Each structure stands twice: as structure tokens, then as C-alpha cells.
Length: 363
Image (cartoon, rainbow, N blue to C red; front, top):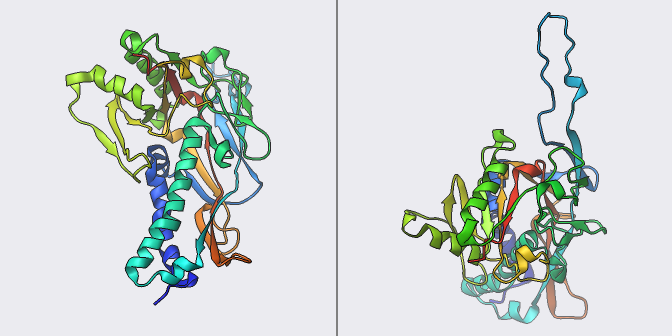
């Protein structure tokens, strides 16, 4: 018998929690954040979130000689408050009534689920990940999500904000990230190094960034996630040559290009190919990143990254975690419309525990 919109919607709602988990598992960074428990679902309050940033120890030692010394800890504080806005994005798609009418049986329903809601969710996921690593989300209207690319911007609340990583020496960084200007707050900068070429000093420069970032916020452990473009990763793999004994993999969803993330260990970090990362895109303007054979590698300490969502009522504003709302009849058309609602943001509270190395695709 034909399938109506309510029957299909029932199947969609049953599968939605599984699809939402696939998003968190789709990307190694997001998966690590979830495993660390650094997610605040259904955050309530202002349209933006303020969070404490401490980039160094907040106190100071007082040496006791006579016993009458006054503690000096109140004279030194490096605490500051970052700020981040949560965007609200809605991916809408339509299922023609004709397709519903012709769907007969479980196999036909499963095909509809794969062609429409599942495909829609997967594409939405890919858009967000591309914005995160490339900052190219304006073409898909997902530029409200944060980007690591300091050459590009993100726009969660009507004002363009600079991406997180700056491709210059830490002492020269001056971008404003999460409402704090780099180097005006002690330690508020990202680690950075540039390779002359990978063969010359590629691994040495990567180790430089890794250790500089890992030694900040030591209680959070070393950098545990690295992401690079395909060519940069291939340079590292080829450089290891017969030293490779094992590789780690992170499949998650199968990407559009059919490439699942594969990785190796770099020190104690899991180093993955990020198939979405493309330094040749126009969103990268730094010559050390986007020039011929340049490339980049991000170094992230997942303990310093956090995620939050806005929304509570599933039937109204939704929980904002790729929640599916609908169906509603499209006026004047034999079609039904569904909406995927995302109100989610990532932020970092210890920037100097993260870094980037450019030039890693240069042979």
C-alpha cells in the first residue's frame, strides 16, 4: 500500500538519534569532544555563551622567610572571558507526494529514507565539516559555524569573525578570536611553524608545533588530534617509509568522495587525513598555505574544545542537534517538507594548546 508522510516521518524520528550520533562519530575532533564529555546540550541563557579563559597559572608563589610575608597571588591574574555565538541553521528538503504514493512496502520506504532524509543529513554534516576546516561555508549558508582557517571568517550573529588559527609567528598574531585579541591576553595565541619543504624540515617543524602545544595546559594531556590535507599526510607517510608498523582508521560515515579517514600516530597524537581540507580553495589566501605545493596540518588538543547546543522542545524550536522537524504540506504543491535544525557551536578555552604547521604539502 502507498506510504503517507506520517508513516515516513515515524521511521525518520526512529532513526534520527542514530543519525545524530553518526555526526559526532563522523569526525575525529567531534568524537573526541564527546568522549571527553565536553558538550553542553540544551544550553539556556543569552544568545551567546561566555566562558572563562585561563592561559597560564592564575596565581603567584610567595617565598616564606620570616612567616610575616603577605601572599602575592592577588597581584597576578591571567583570567579572561571569551565569547561565542551559536548560529541557527535549517536545512530543508521536499519529498514529492508522488514518491510517497508509489512507495509500497518496507523496501520502498527504506529507499525513500536513503534518498531523502539520510542523504540530506549526510550532506549537512559535510557542509559543517568543510566550514570547520576550510571556512568556505558561505556558499552553503553554513558560515555561522566556527572555522579553524584564519584566512577566512565565520559569521554566527551578523558580524564576520576571524578564523581560529593564524599563520604567523605567535608573537606577531593580532586577530580577535572568541572576542579576545591575540597577545593582549597572556598566552592567547596559537602555536605556529612553517616548513621550508617537507624533505628539509617537515617532521622537525611538526614536532615543534606538537610540543609547543602539548606543553600548554598539561593537565589536558598532549595534542591528541592532527588533521591535514591529503598531500601533507602522504608526505608524512612516505617519510616514515618502512617505519610504519600500524595505522589507525576512523571511518564514520563514508564521505562523498568515498574516502574514509585513515591515520597514523604522530608522537601521541592520532594523525588523520581530512578529506574535506583543501588548501587550494579561495578561502585560503596565505602563500605558506595555498601556494603551489604548500598545505597545512592542524594540531588540536581536544580537552580544550567544547560544544554546546541551543533549544529544548523537540516539537517546537527543537534541541538543535540536527533534529528533524516536519512534515508540513507545501502549499500549492503535491509535496511535503521536512527541516533539519542545527543550533550548535564549538569553542576553545585554551588557544595556545593548539597549533598549525604550514608548508607540509611541499615535497
